[in-house]
Length: 494
Image (cartoon, rainbow, N blue to C red):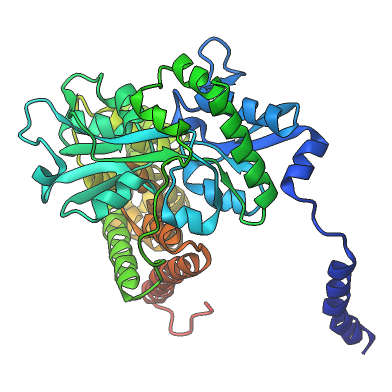
């Protein structure tokens, strides 16, 4: 009874504690108190945003680094501290309080204005379309039905979704232009600051004149940080008036005529245009399509992994010295390096020699990786077979490969079945990594939906439910197969 009474009093005690606790100090007061402005960004954004100095990798540089340092000084802090965060997670991380402000090519959009305090602009960008040299496309209207690449959660992505094109999503800003070079996509639509650094200089790539759209970069702050938002606007206004912002942009070769709009009394902003998306039937259908892609590539990859793994296990067990050495090298190399790295090398690194489309590269990459793990599963199962059975097979006149085929492999398969099923479930989940190759599978669909509806909880729960719905039947099928293969009328398995 006392324990139950304590449990009943616990919520009340927590509520009273929260009421008695002092209110959280506003962010502006807190950063002045610690004399430090913490700003979030992603180093993968690269030059000229924020990146490691070529001469001193321990120091980060970039035009947004300079802006952050100026803001810190003008806000009453002694320094600005960079907080590394994946760009796609900047807004959720800001909302949960990981840093004070988000400052990393954050575009002014109606969705972000509904979610955050956005500052006055500090940079005006233009959306630029890049195509292969000699292609017949002169505008976005010419690309109906074609593959156009961009980054997720950008204005360019929103523009493409409204067009009759196939939108190809990347996480990095250089990879879309590499795929454009190789002919995997027909065009790339991104901010001119990215296009001029990473796309236009590439051989065979040309950036079309003019602009598809125009927008601004802003500083993001939490909705309850009104005091900080006003102070940041005042600081940016002062940077414009005294010319420091222009000097920073000129230092990084970013100033052009379009930046004159920053000096206007009412800097350009993006008007609201549309209601907030919801997790409706259309989204559910997209989730199911993502799940279908996950199943397809997982099954196809495992169809490569199983026979190749069995071949490697057989070579390690019964081949000569050269065969054992080669198979061992393959297994250790593939197990000893991250599958994400292998996917990058297969898709991007080997592209000049072996040009695979994204889905094929994903299937082959996962299949080759899991073959190494399957090889060890099968080899362990074969080692579990009693030595006497091999000797009996030899006494009956069976050769090494006949013994392997008719004696060892059938028994090894039954022993390895639980581990094989577990590996397939792991492959089903690891398939989320192929989103780096522009494959929109279930997890990638979840991240896209989370941004659209501005919530990670419901998309995350739906994604988890679909993964469970795909993996749970596999475990039951494994149990059923074990019973059948054991031929035990009274199985002791749960």
